[in-house]
Amino acid sequence: MKEIKVPELAESITEGTIAEWLVGEGDKVEKGDPVLELETDKVNVEVNADTGGVITELLKGEGDDVEVGDAIAKVDETGEASGDSGSDSGSSEEDTSKEEKEESDQEEKQEAKEESEQEEKKEQKEQSKEDDSSGDDKKKEDVIATPAARKRARELGIDLSEISARDPYGRVRPEDVDEHAKGGSKKEEKQSSKSSSDKKEKEEPKEEFDKPVEREKMSRRRQTIAKRLVEVQQESAMLTTFNEVDMTNVMKLRKERKEAFQDKHGVKLGFMSFFTKAAVGALKEFPLLNAEIQGKEVVKKKFYDIGMAVSTDEGLVVPVVRDADRIGFAGIESEIIRLAERARNKELGLEDLQGGSFTITNGGIFGSMLSTPILNSPQVGILGLHNIEKRPKVMPDDSIEARPMMYIALSYDHRIVDGKEAVQFLRRIKEMIEDPYDLLLEG
Image 1 (spheres, rainbow, N blue to C red):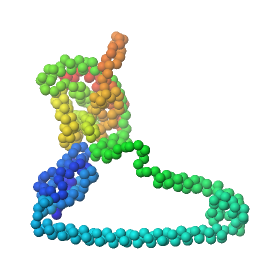
Image 2: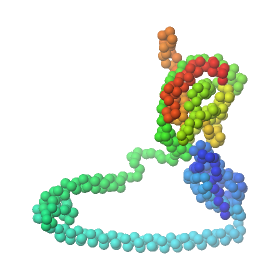
Image 3: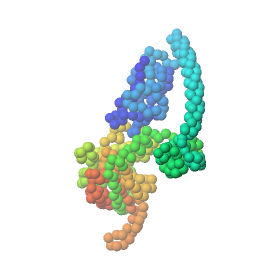
């Protein structure tokens, strides 16, 4: 009997959630056959059988979290698939029947033992209550107190045995009762509060809503997104700076070149390629925004792998456009389309998601007017794009025109990037987008 275990997936992936079993108990598998789909924080991967045989037991169910090295199923290398007959099958049935009988007898003995223990505990509890009651009465009788003190104690509901007498002979007086009542008020309040709280918890149902709700478990990817977003906020000194861009010239250039561009390259000329090229140009001028912190060192990256945030049904993923400084506008547009399609079809590989140096996120496609994007750790910079809307703009000759404007945002890690550099970086993006002809030629 051998076990199928979760294999090493990638350096940064150590755990996952079983999304779907592709086989069941009694199924025959060959070495290398896929047996389940595992959902990780980045992509879904198939786990293959590392040995052939019959699946005798599934050790984990769909929705269970597993780590690398965990056993997830048992395989009988000499067994036959379910439904085969023979003497072995008959023997197995007899063994199973015997085991079930033994388990049943053991369960009955355990139940009888538990019932006996519960009866014994109940008798002990009742005897203890009787002893406590008689003991309390005796204590009250043994306390030396004046009749007035006893009357006062009854009125306040105080046990005389709990009162410390100031009388040298140990006699409890009314003033001792009053003093005890004052000193014990806080304690009584706490006990009363705790008692009422416990009572409230018992009375309240586990479901805290009065109206219908629906609960569903967060996916592995959504859990990881939530965890990392909180970690970024806690571990980095994140700050955001804003600017606005006049999109008139970019829109004019796209209108002039879009048909010729699509005929030549087979893809549309979009805004993302302009902003990607502008980001690469600005990163070359301000290299700290293309860096990351490792311990006490700042690692400045000499490559420009730009992450593109893509929204999917299961959450946000950030596939990477490699060497964005070396490919042209058409190459960037083609790569963005390819990665977006793979993301939505759940076909992204680990190699598509690892190693980005800077990220661009475009909330404008959903109508976002303004936002503060959160860093994609360990990167120290992310550029946020927003909706294009016509707004009045004062021109150099003091005239006012309605222009298509976009707010852009740069979130950055203030630990290594100063405000001056961040503002200048965003200003440089603005300049290149507002004069896109040179950008297109240089790209």
